Image 1 (cartoon, rainbow, N blue to C red):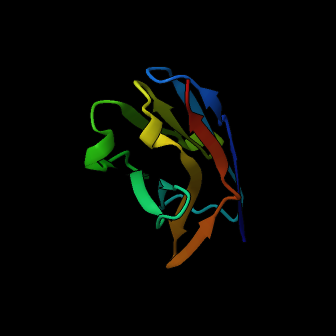
Image 2 (image 1 turned 90 degrees about the vertical axis):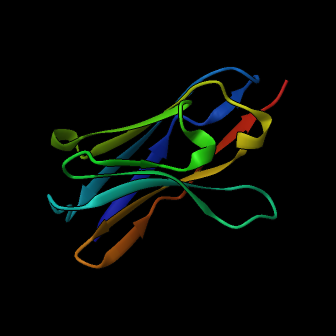
Amino acid sequence: QVQLVESGGGLVQPGGSLRLSCAASGSVFSINVMGWYRQAAGKQRELVANINSIRTRHYADFVKGRFTISRDNAKNTMYLQMNSLKPEDTAVYYCNLIATAESYWGQGTQVTVSS
């Protein structure tokens, strides 16, 4: 089993920044894909960005140039640096890890962008 714990969410003004963290523990295999998803109220969960074990990154078009995903394999931790935040970025952000055909989710962290 893998446990994922997100942190770093909160309330920020438009144009501000936040950094999310996702710490993985348990049977974390060295070969995996970690990603950030988000779900706004009344909407479906969507992929924000993901990164694999060799740090190949993929971003959704709506965050390109504003968000940066990274990971520290030694610490089994993934990060999402979010800059130039917009009100439409308001959502619960979830950490995801896929390894050996299994998918694991964190509990989510709320990000609210509002003045």
